[in-house]
Length: 109
Image (cartoon, rainbow, N blue to C red; front, side, top):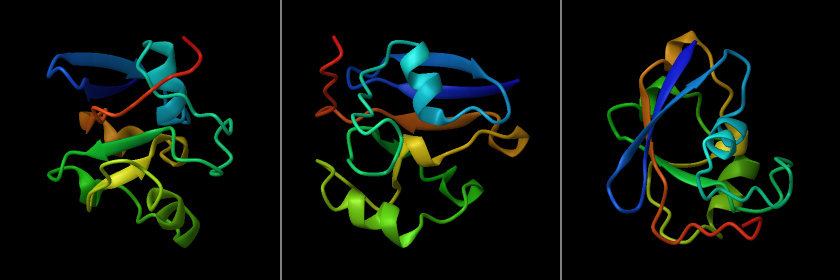
């Protein structure tokens, strides 16, 4: 089990439990967080933009050039911004904290 703390735009924290191999996007959606993932995780949009806690950013592999390009379209992107569809959980990420940006929208709702 991998525990991820999602900090919502209002500051509330959702502690989610996922399994190794799960994508962060799928875990967020399972916990009804507003990460749309319009492209279905194909890295063709930025609707699953999250901000990784700076203390945890070095625990992730660096983003690919393609991911960095998509983050250019993400509202409120910062140095630790990532696409949730590109983060695959494993035991080394247990306790990861990510923030859902205030501008996150989910047209599935």
